Image (cartoon, rainbow, N blue to C red; front, side, top):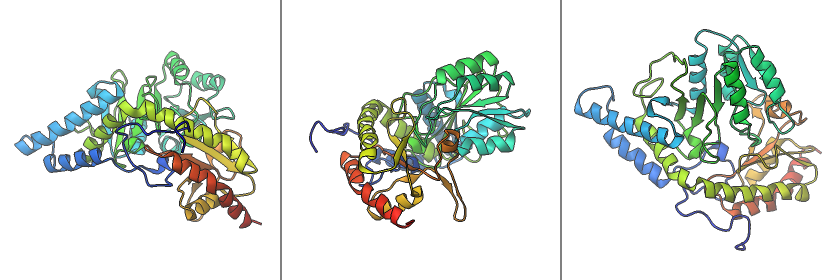
Length: 383
């Protein structure tokens, strides 16, 4: 590739080295060598109960406290505002449990992920879905309508992980503060890709988004908030026995990524602009969804007329390229994406490309080269 192509050079010391053809960062990313070493070192040192007063317990507690301080520093908060959980969805559910101990309603944007909507529907008396525009951005007038009804919690994602559209968090938070309603922000796919959000009362994130271990979530709670989880945090870990090696690995991965994230985001922005520009040229009947500019740098989602997204995913996999469909599926039932439905897009499914950290331009150009053939093959199965 030429030196003036969209992604001419990888940043020095870039975390992660995904397999060639891998374009599903939302689905996970490989651990870095430094993260793996940190995990192993913590497993050797911090195997005892951090609540114990003997030497091994104190050492484990010190390791866990240090990881908690590291993640708090990365998120620009105080250590006692940072908590660990066993996953990103668990962080969301724990946040909602602590905010809804006395019951009440939840107001949420219509494009929240199921990680938010599922626990909200089980915990709240009612979930009020707020309208979004055709790009997936929240309707501020409808937000005002929802806040006027005084929900117990407002849930608005930092950006949509299916189509990449960012939400106007500063405006959302200002309105929530005026109404006296705490704002829960699910920062899925944001940390390490965009600047760390500032406008929130509760923030939930998953370490796998920044190439940390999958079984770690991070929950940040402003100290002024009346948040009472069902279980008391054990040295900052909420729910179950602390997985100290995983916490250390998550903190290490984020420390490693943040100094490089701006350069990597700009590189990915060039590559996703290329994909967005080329898709309508190389494939008939393509609709690229989400806002063209105010979006996460590494996500592109599109629909194809006359074909199911899952079929395109399968055809691409046969050609060595890993992408995802935006629809929610089980083995027996296929459901259209609730995100696309909220955006007013009539589609049974979508195809999402999400660039992992360290993704090469060769992988992107290769994907564009095989996509027309993959779509033709997918359409032929429905002919």
